[in-house]
Length: 187
Image 1: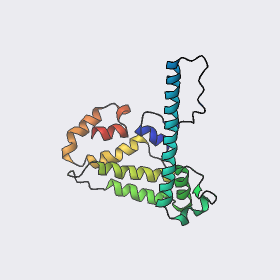
Image 2: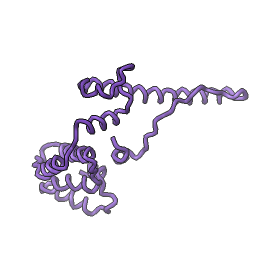
Image 3: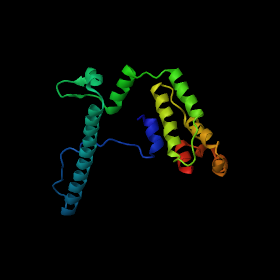
Image 4: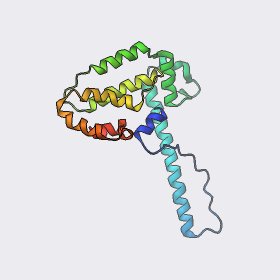
């Protein structure tokens, strides 16, 4: 996931924890201070191990999910895995095998504009379709702005009279608050 997209989902910046190193307790530390330092070190080490465990599991799942013939050119044969991040592998796969052309992007965009959503279905269906277009645009190096993403979902929802009041409420909000995240919360 691009950092820009991550920031739309979470207001907290992700910082990968570093290995805390060896625990050094000063000679003059009190028993209480020693316990605090030990607990802090233990927590930092646990976070580091947890993040690395998730990273290893994701690499393993990626290798299992994708046929080995597609990954073979980037596999490190000594350790039978790839030396890239998951995002790096996905970018390589897309760059090598999965080019998204402008015509493919426009076709997907037109399909979304004419999407006929049934209000008895969950609204998440719209969100997912819009986010698929957003992913496709990112892959084509034509990232969509937040207002563009909102516009696609807005167009679909405004076709339904049952959303008329919610749309009026949305339109009364200041432009700065009309983000994709706020749109999904509002509707």
